[in-house]
Image (cartoon, rainbow, N blue to C red; front, side, top):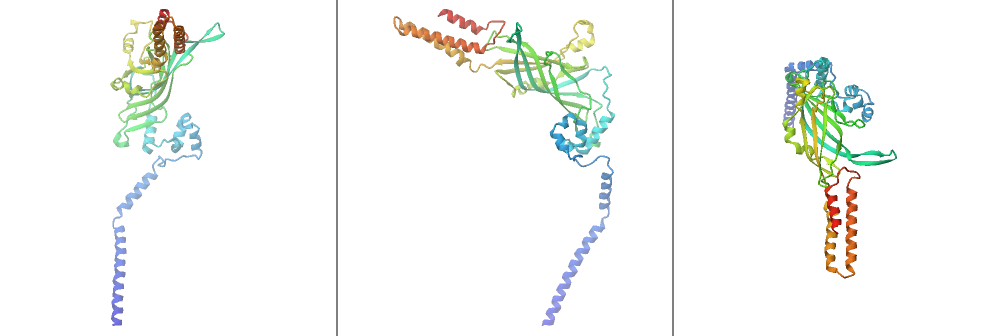
Length: 395
């Protein structure tokens, strides 16, 4: 019995060893059966190694992070975007995007010798902040006096412009890209300029960001800072409304014709919902293009003495925010009126002179509050001042 058990155990071990051997041999045969797959992988690796564009989005210099923190990605964009991709976050699109940028830049002609007028569409406008600063005028060159009838209104916002450029187009199927960002100005862009800004503090156009579609449509995001002098009218104070307009054009006159898209006209409320103006509420924003430019280009002799054009105009309508109008102005006037009328009931009494004196004191306090709200110099007398004067004359 012992000999039979040994033989049976030996046969089981032999079967297991044969099974393991067959498994290993089958795996080796499977790996060697299809030699085309490794050949294709080797071929693809060889192609990647022979590619002229590096496939790694890394910094070529260890100091790139330090330079990027110091703002070199904006001041020295061409070198930084190429050599410090990771620190400047310029890896969008990968190697194909960089190769396409190089191809477009190499074949692009940014000459402005053509006399054709380009059409630039205003796709979006958003107002972020607005400031109203009063001008100062010298009185006998000794004491500066604040002239609040002539003020400067400064507005901060963002514009999105678009235009067609056939030189910035590519085959989407071959390149595999539909959109392409330009990290520095490589193509033609409109050179915006505010034409109604005062000389000491002109408007500024900063922060150009470009993106192009494969069809040749280019978009530009730009931040603007416009300032315009304005004569405020305080006749209806404190319920007055002011309308301030900013005119801008291209530096090259008659080189650009601005048109306003319908989406901007339909979404005027969204353009001003996040804006903040101290003491004012933005009621309406209106941006319009001028048809006069086309007439000038057709026949400038219609008005040869005025070739200044209002190519595009951005107008903002403000309403004074009179939140404390009732508590600061109406309540003192109401209290003084009630005291004056009630003093009639206390004739021949000691309380009547005291009530009249307190009524006059309330009126003086109301006038002081009104004087704090009014500008120090105006060309017209507000209606509320006339009403206050009439109420004092009645007393």
